[in-house]
Length: 180
Image (cartoon, rainbow, N blue to C red):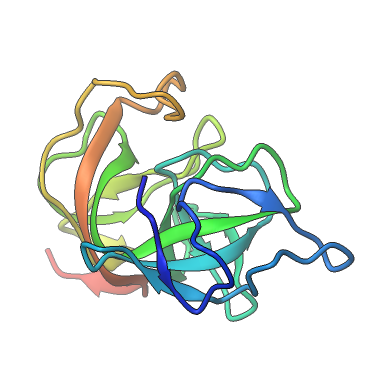
């Protein structure tokens, strides 16, 4: 759990998730960015539904974070604190090293693409080599998924093997055509 610095009224752990709605806004405005002591960068978002620690999400310019699917386009982040339902606000990581990204069994080191949402969780898939792909730029997997589990990680879903480490550099998805 990282402790953040930046334009906030008080220090906060990245794992903290609070109630958020238009009638009950949080103390931290949506879109606030902060860094931890290691230089990792996080952005504060509104979750549209329950999210697991390590799940990948896409977020828009209103900072609403939603699940990724096989044809998602847009900015990507990794959830840092479990949101038990919608109307929650919390941190997603967008830059640096994340060692708690949920992953499926086909993940090994290299570039990733968005995968289908299965069991309610969004996890990256390994980049394909032919046909239409939705590659995640600025999102590199550094190791195969580990079956080790930690509290708060949704590794019980059938599509989740465990966790992996990724290098994040303001990731985003833009569809492209790969050549065979």
